[in-house]
Image (cartoon, rainbow over all chains, first blue to last red; front, side):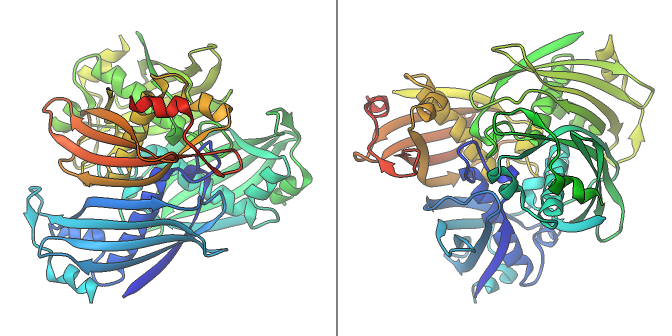
Length: 130
Length: 130
Length: 130
Length: 130
């Protein structure tokens, strides 16, 4: 299961080198994960309300071609289960106009309860990997 | 002429009080102005490429009801010409689900050339007020 | 009582026009208010812990000269009481190297309890105006 | 050669889960690299002015304990040369009050000329590894 969502690059995303600031790609990635989760059952806000906090455990990202003001960035996300406690998003960010790869990333997530204790991935999240 | 564009609130927009961080509403407003300008001729990036930088001169904003994670914010923008050198965006940000007003703002813009000198609003921008 | 605090401009603050992105000046202003409050009794986090949320009611800001990457911005803040329910920060952001004024702003704040109900400014905040 | 710089967590850095938003740690890391480079010769802005753009090639980061509003984060950075074209920052972000590790990261950087072509690391940057 792979999902594609698209977002435009605005001034807020850029820096004085004229391209998207590297930390801001992680915002695009998080929007992609939020849409991925929300499209398959509960929204992230609903998971929070049920006491399940989905948080980032680790990231690996390679920056390839920069995106610039006005670009549409396609965020393509898929999900797999690494262990009872850990899920993995594979995410590619490409410039919609050219298909060029901007960022290639792996984002591992874990779940916490409201006391910040690690819990197993709930079934509703594990199912995202199907 | 009034334009409505909509954006979802993601984690990046919120702060630890559980609502959208006040400075981030200005990002939503800038997205609204970018879409407004782009829908009526040249995009902001094209204006830049032609040597016309559209920059914010001043803002007035009142914060009413807070938006929260997952909300859709409608940004409703209109434009008027204040003088040969100054344009004014009137912008309202509302929660799409309830229509509640989040932010009520006035944003004055001016144009600079690439040497940062003030120039008259080009005809293509003045026409946005019609 | 006036307080000056200083912050450097990093890439995160800039945009592709090569200057500080307008919304980000509001972050500098919020840092200035946080330091102002924290220097005179309780920190903002402590006020929150006591159930007093200090939130922005409205802002007026004029953007004068842009700041650029590597600049040190001085944030000079003072505080006055407008009414039992409203306080006002007057804030000037200047480039430390030249003294040039970047932003001139007025920020009105109000206090909410943890149910988001408006409450009177507590004595500890009113005293900031002395 | 290791360098420690410290930054406070403000509202802008947090999200509605009550902790620092994951993408914003990358801002702290970039501030750390900027200070590291600037402390040993030319500032990043000066490198840019000489036509050398230092950009992030890839990152690996593990998120350990979250930081919260008001925390001081220590950013400890060191630098090594991976190849003629690539340098590596090793960066740890810790809460100053407790020494707890927040983020453990490796950030590889490369240099581009103003035409976005890859160039060898200039001697002035390679020396940061000594």
